[in-house]
Structures are given as structure tokens and as C-alpha cells.
Length: 91
Image (cartoon, rainbow, N blue to C red):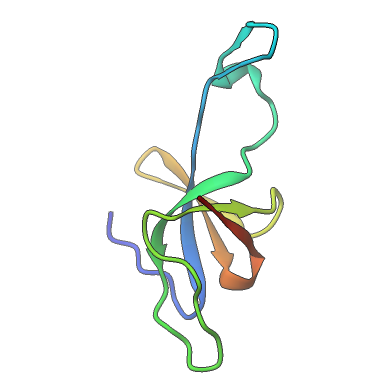
């Protein structure tokens, strides 16, 4: 994939996980209708002099569900957001 976000934009890919409830019930990703909030950073835009980008490729980040623009490339879904819409880095 050859995508380079511009300025302070960050390209994110959703981290999809199957989950098990506290009672032991298996919930596949297809049963979860809400979009994930945790993403992996795939690409980071060139640094803009007036803004500092706080994330790096491979970081796992928390991002608002409705922020940014969703795109589909090569049968995969991504989200492009401005650096300011990334809420936290997940460690």
C-alpha cells in the first residue's frame, strides 16, 4: 500500500478482536455492531511546522468513533484522522 497522509493526518487501521464475555460467552467480531475505538497507526503525515505529531507507526491509539474519514483500499478499511483527534496511546 502506497499512501502517505499529508500534514498532520494519520492513517489508522482498526484492531479487530473477537471477545469473550465475563460469563464465558464467545462473541465473534461479526456480532459486534459498534465500530472499534482502538486502532493501529499505519502511516503518519509529514510533520507540519505548527503542529507536532505525537504518534508513530505501529502505535495503538484510542480515537473517537465518528472522527476522521473512513476509506477502503485493497479490500481493507482504514480511517484518516487529524492528529488532534487521537485521544490517547494504548500501552
